[in-house]
Figure (cartoon, rainbow, N blue to C red):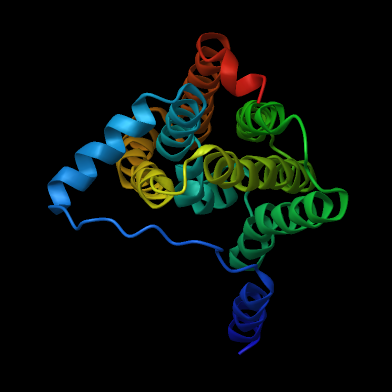
Length: 227
């Protein structure tokens, strides 16, 4: 009930948004044509394409750590089920604090910097988490990871919504949804690596790969870091 109430408040807040002053009518086209146009549009925009590439990198290599968090709690930190719940809540607590800070301060400049910086910091904190053998330190690292995740999550949508044209905004957000949907591939990869190398090594290896990919986007897509 609490979650439903919070979601309802978010829905009610949409009524405060200004209505579009003018709506352009477009001729309907085939769904495959719309998809092709959307992909062509996002590939032609460096900042939007950079956001999508980082989103895929983190969803494939970083976020799947949650799937083997129970293994970390049991085999590495030697904790039980209640401690696992507290450990898993660290990420959510950090995300909540980060979201409140972003909403309080407001973001008008340096959005690309916050997006890329939060993404790289996520990879770093996950690497450190994989090395920790102390429960309290592990929890604090996950809180820090959640703070960074809030920056990444808020800015990925903000950048795309701000850059996409009115006619292509829906398709650009659809491409973002596809990028987020790549996470099951990462879950399969993370599970396979954990069975082969162990949970800590799997998290560290995947976080390192994600960090390298984010740095590659930082270097090769200057328009995004300057946004």
